Image (tube, rainbow, N blue to C red; front, side, top):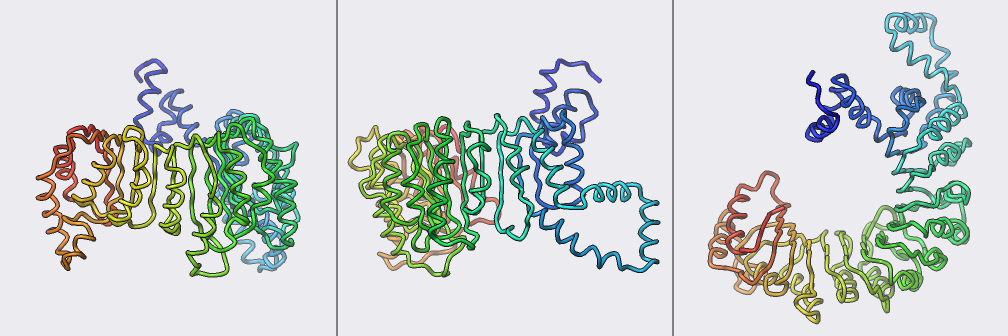
Length: 494
């Protein structure tokens, strides 16, 4: 083996896929550390099986435990253990011949015997809780912690002891997919460290408490828990699994002085996120800190499958009416469920300051794109958008004409393209024409674009994602060459 400095081996490892690195664990000490970090960087505990038991045993070694950075936990394994214990008497009634066969198989296969011994150490859920507590308490370097905890009311053993044991000082991101009722048990004032920078909440309801209890949980437990992170919290995401009045939460939240990125998942079923003025009050309270706002329309659960889009449109209008976010720079609306009219309402409300816009999830006609760009007409040309991600759209010469004329100082453009055609839908409808074969339309597009040049367009980066092609787009290289000629300022296509 060539004796190279440690730094060179680290540089070489950067070009080796993670799946290959684990096979190089015995090459030298550098590759051993890299492979071990790769293997144990992210750990998941969800199902009670031999893999989970091996991880419990392995992570009791401090040298291995310090390598864990990302931890995922779904304590459904407590229910598995109880179900296995309940089925045990029926298993013990097997015939003597079958039990002798199992014993012989264990003697012939030492691995089966070792796994059997591991299982015997965890006869009850309490044994597993104690073992998990020891393991999680010994993970000092976890930075990202993901917990999913809902729908386990039938399990008397609480996972709180070992879940809270992983709340170490190095923790920076906490992602909870959790029921409101379990918030009370987990996010106690003495449990969670106060230096969380990113909090991702997916909130559910276990439906064994009355509605007034949900409001009290938000006011007395969830809002104080979020407020405890105010000295460090930069990113906050709140998504509701089903429609619920979250106005008590928004009103109870104190100002978070370091909050810059806010994501909201809005159920499309009424009452959405509850009383709209509650959210408006929170947004105004954070108006001087938020730099990035992401809005999603969600439908995880609800009473119907065909909600009325007018309901969410009215809710959005009331929720953002009068809201002032003075330093907002990025607006992201990405959902096929979010009505386009609601997107326009948000865009016109916040277009005065944003320099980055993401608007994806549904098809936008040329008229839609024109309506989007109308929101920036009152701003000086040198203060309009710098980056734009839009889709899906039809890539046409008219679309590029519009973007080049309205956004001459655009730096980065990403288009999710459904089709490449010579003319916009509006033109085809106006002349009663019909679409020809896709290959012919692409040829027409190339012919039309060869006549166009955009010397005043300062675009530097252009990325085109063709979403409707199940295979590699055969015209991709030719399209890039053509657009590089049409837009001389382009420096890259990624």
